[in-house]
Amino acid sequence: MPAANTNRKNKIIGVVSGKGGVGKSVVAVNTTAILKRMGRNSIIVDCDLSNPSTGLHLGLSYGAVGIQEVLQGKNKVSEAVVVQPQTGIRVLPASLKYHPDVSLKNLKNVLWSMTAYDYIIVDSPPGITSDVEYILETCDEVIVITTPDVPSSTSAAKVVSLCQDKKTRVRGIVVNRSTGSPFELSNKEIETMAEVPVIFSIPEDHLIPESIAARTPIVLYKGSSPAARVLKEGVGIITGSTEPMHAREGFFGRVWRIFRRVLRR
Ligand SMILES: Nc1ncnc2c1ncn2[C@@H]1O[C@H](COP(=O)(O)OP(=O)(O)OP(=O)(O)O)[C@@H](O)[C@H]1O
Ligand SMILES: [Mg+2]
Image 1: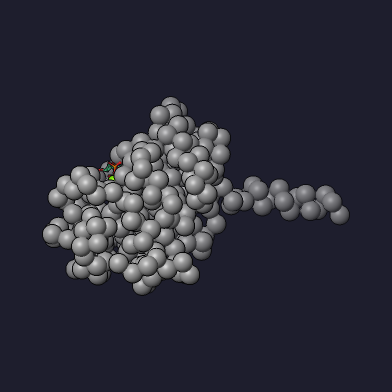
Image 2: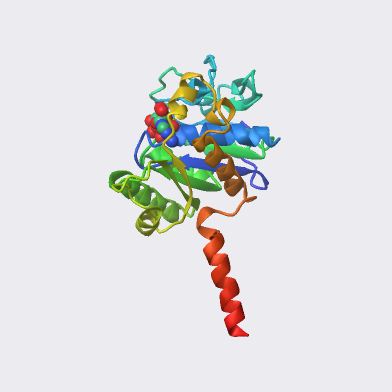
């Protein structure tokens, strides 16, 4: 395996969460699909070694070689990368075969050597485990996914604090499956718990399970759906081309700023 390139210029972005099932794989797969559409050299890496799902979201047939074999040094990255025929999306899948002896200890060596890709999106397993710690040590930054409820947001806050211990930059929180119900935590409440901003919020959208059944990222399956629209804007925020939600002034903010300027004259 080539040595990790410490002078690399690309970006490795981890999609992590405290609780499971909150939408990491949906966000990771759609982010990669949007980056591909934008013409960026990007790849999604499935780091969920016990429950890999990236290939399932993209309708890929699993081969004998996955990231586990690369981590073990048995195969090269190029022998494991799969190209989705319909879209050209690059995937480094995890093989479905269970490898109890393989961990992500070598992840930094593998991902830091993948300099052909400008963006490497890491789909993570849930929780706080040693494998998640290796992911945090490998990524340049992470986005933390939560649903708008107390158990999930409490776990998200724990992950944020682990990131701080590891000195991994947290790009922000993404709230998924918002319905607007009065029982949901507001973005402000989640920000107070985790002490990092919510960068965007994806609504509950019945087309997401439908798109997974169709094995097509929702941004390609139904790009005009509410969740797909937010995801497209969200990737602008992640890549730095759009301002995050919390940094936007809004109409009243703009009026108030102009009003204050007039008062000061
Ligand atoms: N915005 C949404 N609207 C409706 N359903 C959603 C939304 N986001 C995710 N889901 C549903 O939630 C399920 C879990 O999503 P996903 O697999 O992305 O979670 P995960 O965090 O990766 O889970 P795990 O921790 O097991 O890896 C999906 O099967 C999908 O149907
Ligand atoms: Mg997942």
